[in-house]
Amino acid sequence: MEYLIFFAVVLGVNLMPAFGPPTWSIIALYTLNGEMETPLLVLTGALAAALGRYALAHATRHLGTRWLSAETQANLAAAREALERRKRNTVLGLGLFALSPVPSAQLFEAAGLACVRLLPFTAAFFAGRLVSYSIYAFTAEQISATSLGETFREEMTSPLGIALQVAMIALLVVLARVDWARRLGLNTRRGESEG
Image 1 (cartoon, rainbow, N blue to C red):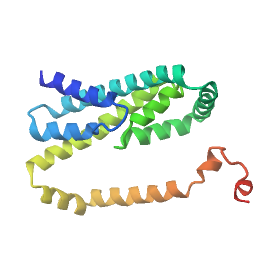
Image 2 (image 1 turned 180 degrees about the horizontal axis):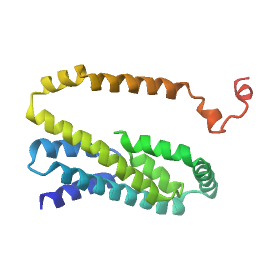
Image 3 (image 1 turned 180 degrees about the vertical axis):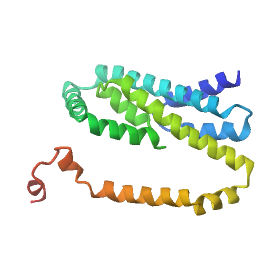
């Protein structure tokens, strides 16, 4: 029964178009305060989140086809075609998105409006959330077993923690240096826009 209640809570939160609490925080709360098995908690949370976001995207798609102008729908179709043409970039972007803790409601709403194929999109989200929710649940377990200060000190001084921080900073620098407009073909003549 606890798992069904947890599933319903996570599903409801992920049906919200905005301002819902992040699912990882619900998982951490249940991990810290409950007696539920962590692997099953993570699987249930990822499944409920994926189903909620899938339903949100479908609802947004339905509303978009009824209420958006023909011009807006044509713009969204062009965006979908550009996205689908660059499969490798799409997979990379989905992978980064799926593993990150950023809010996903608006991305699923955009996917719904653009009529992107939702099953692969949702499957990537589910797979990524399995990984990220596992990390959050494991961290919450560790915090519940030790003092908070001790846990933070260990993470800040561990070689793996330091290496991960350095790698993420390097990745941020690389991402900031990429000329995304040129790579995406949005601005083929840079001088024209600057001049």
